[in-house]
Length: 214
View 1: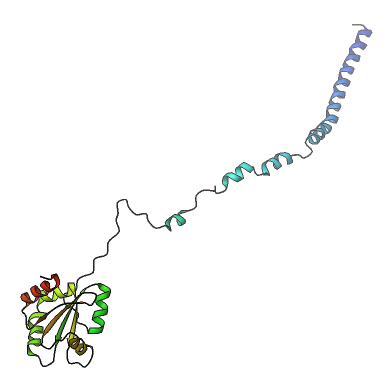
View 2: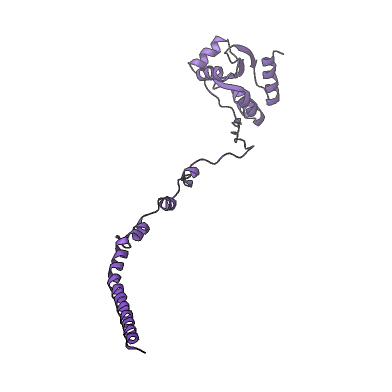
């Protein structure tokens, strides 16, 4: 090998070494700048990612709220239960008919009879009349007669010697025998009279005859 060739090889080797050293230095110098360039490319660093994750998704926020809907069962349970189909209201029981008549006086008896539109049966008596007491015991206290009178009449006791309304009524209609039964229409008009003692069955038959006009 000639000297010239040897010099060329030495030159090439030196050139290669210098070139390698140059590029290594360039690489080292470029590394910090590259990192800075990467950092500056994202000036906020991880902030954009952090910010994006920190914001609340409006749709998600709406979804976790309790959706508006029908109110709870409090309002519904305050309503009364609906009536079952076909259910009927319970009818009040009719008033029971009294089993015994309530005997009253002349003034109240006539007023009450007009209001309730019932016939009036007046028992005209005196305190000393024995047959009057028999009529009370045997006839007016008979269970059948009691129910019959209670269902259809306003009953009046008329003392013909009481010095008041009873005596006035007896004189008005000329009653002078005792006992005497007087039957009046609801309006107060006299329909008929029965004199003397009468047993239960006969008493009811005769009163009905006076009312019907037979």
